[in-house]
Image 1 (spheres, helix red, strand yellow):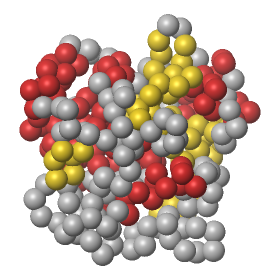
Image 2 (cartoon, rainbow, N blue to C red; image 1 turned 90 degrees about the horizontal axis):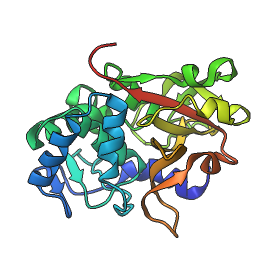
Image 3 (cartoon, rainbow, N blue to C red; image 1 turned 180 degrees about the vertical axis):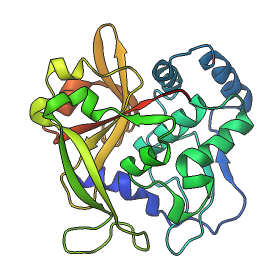
Image 4 (spheres, rainbow, N blue to C red; image 1 turned 45 degrees about the horizontal axis):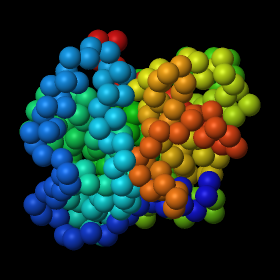
Length: 264
């Protein structure tokens, strides 16, 4: 994983101001615009297509790292920053919008999506992609094995512990998790065809202590597959759609989670 991608996932260490009032910056959005978007999304019954529809509203949004506030020494503050997103906060906002009907419900749902049990606290924040999905398992299910079939691999990871024992996130515990991913050799056309629009995907990281190096949303349009993501690449620095197969070239593998409704 390149230094830039690693920074994306360590951006959550941003030592912002002390906890207090919520930090809300809607950028060019307004509460009315958000609720109109939610009304339109509410007419889409398929959960994946709803996520795909909502994510389109973020296209061209600037890439902005370190927007969340809190670490082991700085009290956590609840943040909504729609004027700029990174790859992880983009998924936070899309999933919270998917599950809400108005602005107030969006704020409440975002707390549930970003934090375990909705508790705004550094130790309850879902810092890792697999933890994010695990905490939202009632409405986001893992389909890596469904997509990858017999080619998937499962490895044990000690999330947050670097090779040598140091922590990526000081003050945050190490969590032992089994991570299933589709290895790069199996990311062929027939496998990728099992992906659905709106799937949340993570680029598997082989580094000790990390599950993924980047994440985004699968988009199907005009018979092609794209990755919709907040790119930190210096020549991009915004939310874009990139050809998925081309993006996966040289990557280690793929983890896939799929949004779902309340029913199984």
